Length: 98
Image 1 (cartoon, rainbow, N blue to C red):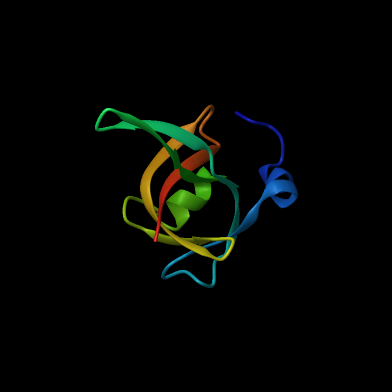
Image 2: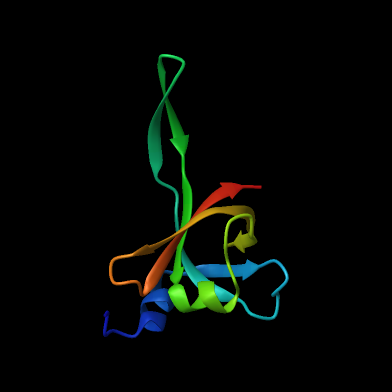
């Protein structure tokens, strides 16, 4: 397990996040917007993927799952998928822009 203090890492790189229904429990997440190349109808196209890296304990506490509405740095999204990464200390939430 990652022995560093996760909150220090998130304070340095994180953006404010809020889950719908829990405005009193804001948390930090690391927003990512990597481009992905997609092949559609025989043509290549670039698409921006949206994701936020959060502590797994936050996912459990706030019951974040498929279709959960979330705001990341003031932008509204819906959760498409939750994936624990590496040792499970962090979960990547794959998002759809609302």
